[in-house]
Image (tube, rainbow over all chains, first blue to last red; front, side, top):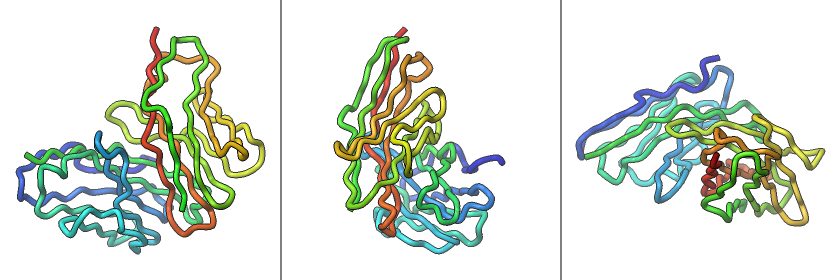
Length: 115
Length: 114
């Protein structure tokens, strides 16, 4: 298996622009997570899905952030409009059904820079 | 609510010496505990987990961790550190009775010097 795939790996954009991050989870995994990592705040869970349904989005910082999972093999995290404080590394992770004891598998991340 | 603490931001050891990265947790029931490692410019990589059974868990790259219920700890250890072990290490906890996801610690940066 190719593992969790994220694109793009790097994104540089100007303040006010829309940014879309993409994730393909590992086939057969029913949970998908979006995280943000910064030096100041460490690793933060933004939202997670189970069977394509959002379960907990309490970590989404504000309405400028939205996430979708239209099918089992694809998810997006959108920021509109983007701001410099959104600069971070965004990780997608997935894990199996009945995942309470299962580890999460992380993608390589998308490094977002908003100027 | 579940939580996890990594009391040390940074750990420095000499190559060949044993290493310990500390983790303590707070969970109302019996926890599921995990260790992940992050190398520069990479995603987190699973190292090992404790679910039930033997308190000493062995994982990838020669790492092991010991679950200590009385001290609510799950310290990561390795008998002989390598320079290539230098990375950021995260402890995570999940309460199997709660319908939420795992909580990650703030991370500990391990530096192994030759």
